[in-house]
Image (cartoon, rainbow, N blue to C red; front, side):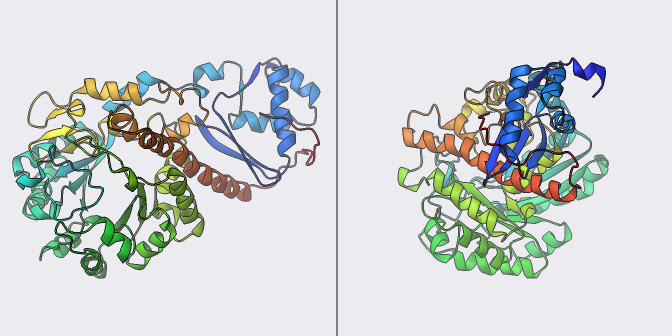
Length: 497
């Protein structure tokens, strides 16, 4: 340690995550600088060392009190667990809201959701598309000019070398497959030439109850990836996702998934978790694997639809059971992390090493949803809710950045009560914000529903990150040679951080 370091003030990061496991294991992390530090043995000694930092507060005094632990101090500094001097003020302990708003002007990727149809042939028990806002009985279909304008405006707002994902969405988008084909041809023949420095990819989110005759050929030609909801084995799925007339849908969907996968196409599968399937999540993960999915996603049900009506209480799952089930799925190793949502998303964010200040990309304008009339909303869960209306895609008033600015301020973890003092905030981003946006102030929502949303936003997200952190830290420890520093392995003193 050099002379300058000796006189340096030391503090423990305000963003400290400290996890304990087993008899002696410890994991430390600064959430704004996510380099997890795994201690296999010596938990009490490390905690004692950290408490001493709080008391003596300078590098010189720590060196005198712990002369054998110079390497330990350097390691804790390198991982951002201990902050030296003014580094905390300079950025290691604080986010920058203004910088986050500026990031909206440098878009590297946009996922554009086009509601090709606002009608659907299924009658899911938890449907998010409100009858009034989606006008579900009107058989509404998007027109080509709306779709083309939406795509061009997104391409215009992308940075050079950016990536646009066009998601055919609904309702059931394959009810308007003709437009889907027209969109693809317009992109391939016109827009890819005009925007030669940007990528365009195609996705279809469908219930896969119908397969147009030419869909497979088009999907193979243009590398279309599918996402389909399969809520579980036959009994679960048929209860959750029947046809409108009550007919069962599971067998038909599985036949169509088989047709797609046998043709070499990729189908990712998703399960919406309700009280119906909350106790069978491992079984669902196995089912997704058995029927040929390339990935498995578990999404706790959103308890409010676009009309802002609340889901029947008996359908809302227990947050604790959802957390328990997801933990079991993760530990079962049925799926690799990269193919298991939401673990794959958080794994990517953690490994990227960036601070996360919001739970999704909606406030950045990265997930616009365009309805059949060209009205734009920032997220699939906010379609039809007037206070989130960003404007119409064909008008100059789009996008209404005032709404996006408000969302960014409202959802930034440094502004949320219960988040802004939490050490986890820069690694979880406050979790999915849909409950905070649509349920917390909803007069129709009962206390139990609000509690569920808060737990999914916070406890659920923390558990996902905790499981990943332990595994990442242990893997990193195995890849590094054992440190020669001599840290006592058994200390009787007990300290609480």
